[in-house]
Each structure stands twice: as structure tokens, then as C-alpha cells.
Image (tube, rainbow, N blue to C red; front, side):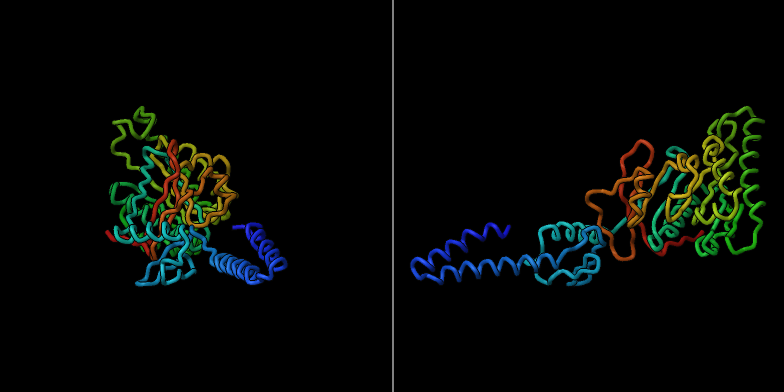
Length: 318
């Protein structure tokens, strides 16, 4: 309601007051205008970001850091829809259902999101899913967060290479080893007259997955990093080598590499510039996020952007 709608009532009340002495009509109009103004200010003070997680704790309902009134009659219409979706999600229980399927879709994947959005947790979930689905695969773990993400998994039989930013490894040796893996596989395919890993004659060659936490830090370590990872990004498809990388921003990633990271995932409040660079769009209606879970959007080649939830504090054992 606009204030201009109240003006005729006030003018008419003033007219009655001056013409007939019925000042109470002006008083009633003024009271109505004051009530409208109070309600408007009350509602403006209850502005809520509906993209924030919904937390249902007993009789308390929170949207982000805003506690909704106890009585639902005081709720805004849009709050009911958001809380109802969250209640449904809580009743049914969230499910982590993001499947990359890099062998058939996209080859390589990138995850972007600010600090605390859950990039490392999602990487660990994807690492566990990869090993469960392909127990005979080979894995390289590059942990440029001091080993906090992958150190507990370095003893797995599938892990052929593990490095962190604090272990004192030789950057030249590390990135040359990754380049050598590309060359070794190219020679293996050529020796058997195969053009790609899917050829039946290459059935004994396992796929190799390179997980990198904090790609920006990896690229900053050495000029050799960008050339080695770009080589994997451009040639890995036929050789069965896949990149799964996480970083806070897509800025600074070589264009050739970024073009081939075709499965794109954004977590939480990713920067709009990064979303535009990755051609990702936020959904009009975000899915509810329960406590202990985080959310993201994913886009695979030739598919629409989808939403997913994933649990925080992820771990797995084999």
C-alpha cells in the first residue's frame, strides 16, 4: 500500500472537520495512516535473505540468523514456502546424490567457493565415491592446504602420488612426474595401436584421477604446474586421466585449462564474477539446507544447472 492511497481519506477527514466540526473523522484517518506506517516499518525490519539455510530446532525456526516469530500468523507469505520446503527436506532426510561420471561427461571438474563453503569436504566425498566405484583406479592427491584434506588417505592402495605444500617436495620433480604420466600413457596406447583408453585392447590400463585442493596455490608453486596441468586437461580424455580441482576463484586459471574443466561446481556464495566466467546461474529457488549440510550448483556439458546438498565433516574408511 502506498501513502498516496491514504491521502484522500486524510483530506476528506479535514474537509469534514472544517465544514461540520466532525474532527473525529480526521482523527480516525490519521490513526489509520499511523497504523499503516508502523506496519510498514515493522515489515521492513524483517527483511530476510531467503537463500540462507533454514534451521528448524524444536519450536524455533531460523532463516539464516533471523528467528521467525513464534506465531505463524505473523509470518510473511514467502516464509511459509521456504520453511515448508525445509521441513519436507528434514522429514525425508537430505541425500548426497552428486555423481560426476567423468568417464562419460566432461572429463575434468572444477569446484569453486569461498573459504568455509565446503570445498575440501566435497573433494573427500568425491574421492570416496571414485574409489568405491573404481577400486582398481590410480590416484594422485595434491593437498595445498597443509595436508589437512588428504593426509589421512595417502596410505590407500590406489594412491600413487601424494604431496602437500609443506612436505618439502621438489616442485620440478612433482610436475615433471605428472607430465611423465601423460607421456607414459601415450606410449602405452601407441604400442598397442589404440587411440583411447576405451578401446578393448586397453582394458588393463586403469584410469588415473588427480585431486587438487587449492588449485591457485598449486599453480603458484611453479611455472611447471600450469603447463603440466594444462597438458592433462587437454590430453587426458583419451588417456584416462581426470582432474578434480578445488579453488576459491576461477581467476588466474589458464584459459586453455579452464576451457577443458567442463564439469563446473559452485558452492555457497560463490563470487558472481566467477559464476559468469564459468557460465553458471543461481537457481531462482534454492533448495533448503539443513544444519551440518552445505549446498552447491553443478553443470555438466549439455545439461542444465542442477542443485545438490552434501554433508560437512565428510570422511570415509576402506
